[in-house]
Amino acid sequence: MTLNFRAVNDWQPDGLRIQCIDAHTEGEPLRVILSGYPHPAGETILARRRDLQIHHDALRTALMWEPRGHADMYGCIVTEPVSENADFGVIFLHNDGYSTMCGHGIIAVTKVVIETGMFPTSEAEPHIVIDTPAGLVTAYAHIKSGRVQSVRFRNVPSYAHRVNQFVDVPDIGNVRYDVGFGGAYYAYVHAHEVGLETNPEHYRDLMHAGRRIKECIAANMRIEHPFEPDMGFLYGVIFLGAAKSPDAHSRHVCVFADGEVDRSPTGTGVSGRLALLHAKGELAPGERIRIESILGSSFTGRVREELRFGPYKAVIPEIEGRAFITGQHSFILDPNDPFQNGFLLR
Image 1: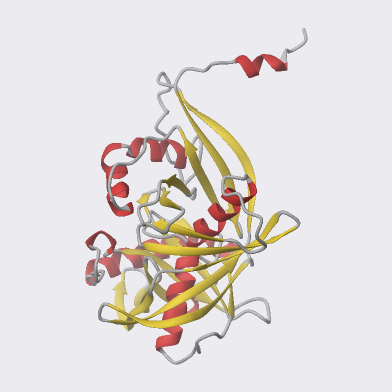
Image 2: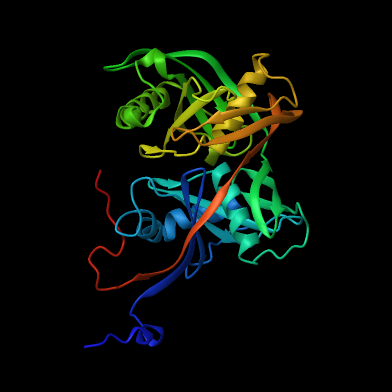
């Protein structure tokens, strides 16, 4: 018997089809959802994010969880813009819900929309203005021979929220941490102070410690965003370690959402770290530093601008990294599939 491979072109499966392009930024995945997903309602990106949470969350789990994803999957929905000068909007999603901002996601979605022709351009360094739940972000793509070599973005105002705080964590002890905001709130902990190292061999220990530390800090510290109540929560814990490369500043391992471990250095996390270093007088405006991930990949960052953001002395960080497209997918949600909405096993 000879299989007729051409027959698949005429195949009409039952169920909802959702079109996606997958990419990764320095190792961290991004599933860019292009069509088949309901258009979220709302006049702001935060309102649209809320609409997805309330009315369409089963689609998030279907695409982020198994069998189509995994516990560390990450994605974004491309929407119409809400700001007059924005090119499009994005809503970020993960294993536990929806992010307020995502740096690796900005880098990857910029790569995707340019290289697929969705955002046609003939410039060597076009810029794209993107509406995110945290505010407007501007991305700049470095193009060579028709390919996006890297993307840098100017983030939302970022600031030091708390420094030199302590919390008692069962089985770990008294943990020292800072809290910085870079589009989301992170607690920064020196890994060696809790007996850990920022390498892949400590992956599971970092994940479990990050979850416990986040839970204890969230129970003991109230976080209020200056303008948006929906953004006032601790998103993750970032473990700081020594860089392996001699020209890098340090290493980040971010544990966020429900125990997800970021494979990249975390764009919003690097933004918050720049704000903390600047507030402590350890980073001058314009000074570039390179921060590694758990894989040894890296982002570079610098402070572009100083400003006020509500009651805070804030900065505008600029972060740069690379993304790569890994696949184009047409996912099918079969109504007869008992696992159509996904499941998770760790």
